[in-house]
Length: 272
Image (cartoon, rainbow, N blue to C red; front, side):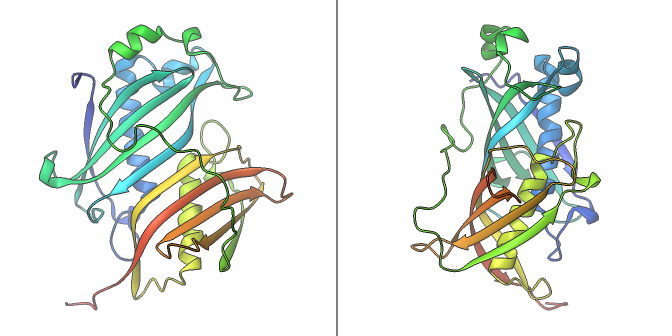
């Protein structure tokens, strides 16, 4: 186990990053995690700034998180441990552990695995890793330990479409774009959770969505002013499982697929 190339960062959770229950939004947790990821990539010489010299960038193709405890709230400390698991073909695997307050086994609240590729900055076409780095050296600086999933399962639409479904219609704005001039990957997650919240008829004054697991697969880029249609539906065999899909308005291209397990919890009245 190579722990020398881990990066561990502590992030005080800001008030504006929290949902009405006072807990950090999932997409904001992902933002903090990716800040730590980029710091770790700096140790490996492949952070975002370094890649620009090669006219390359990182593109996330999949992310899966499992949460085993409640998410941190405002002014609490989120600790992120990030490391590279290594390179397989053109795909890079990255692991995260999330802690509340400090890095200790008793404080572990969640684990995530993400999958990435290197792409050209102009057309976002996949690049051969060897054109940017030495694969053997990169793997030597990686830790093969798995935080969440050894293999991120490929998602496909449910064979039997859910009987109960909900639709969210969203136009991509300037605030949704990242440096790659497309919808940032954490904003896909935000829209997926929004669609799930509509499906379960969440009342944010009385309830909160406790996410147990979330898995998202990115299929196609979404750009400025695109119209994204996000549908969500309950799994016919497991009511705690929600299937979510995003597609562009022409209906031809799948933008993303996701699934989420959850519980709908009641908020305690003030003072209790």
